[in-house]
Image 1 (tube, rainbow, N blue to C red):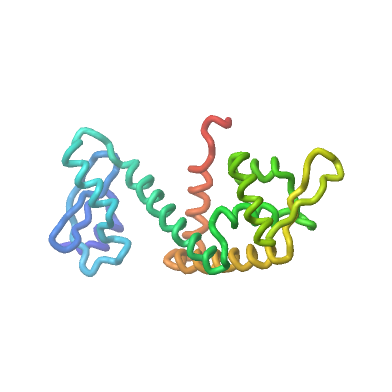
Image 2 (cartoon, rainbow, N blue to C red):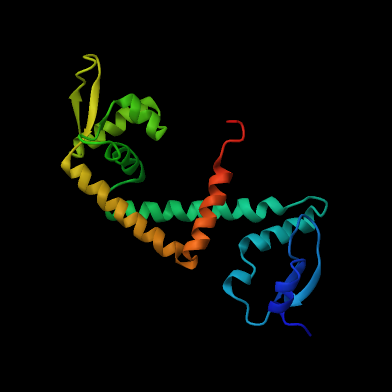
Length: 207
């Protein structure tokens, strides 16, 4: 019998058997011959998405479920990233929304300031919510309001030293945790994944 690794390498139109179960490799809705993988790698084993698709394929056998192979994994990765971000920000004494506001200011050149309208655009937070959040950040000594020299009717929000220290700590913690998550991919894989995600994130209606 041809080994699983040899068969997979020579013929991509195969399905993979893990232990007692076999799942057809998905190319649209087509199923192909079964091969057995001895001691499968973690990436070869069925994950939650595989099991979800298998269950739905029995309920909707006429439907091409292949988009779930990508989109369901992206959703799970996004949920994991949200938890990872929250943990990194908590270690720096920040909530996720606080990081978003402080990071928008920190990315600006010194003196790290923006108008409230610019902050709303940068963070996609509503006007009323932004007003409340700025009050909170001012109260914590992380930002300050200053008169806008170009418009006497408005103010500028400036990052204070404590805010710089907090957001920098949070960012360092975040990228360190993300590096651990990405350690399963080598540099080439990460570059290819970034390229594909860049394509996927483009707005098809933007032209």
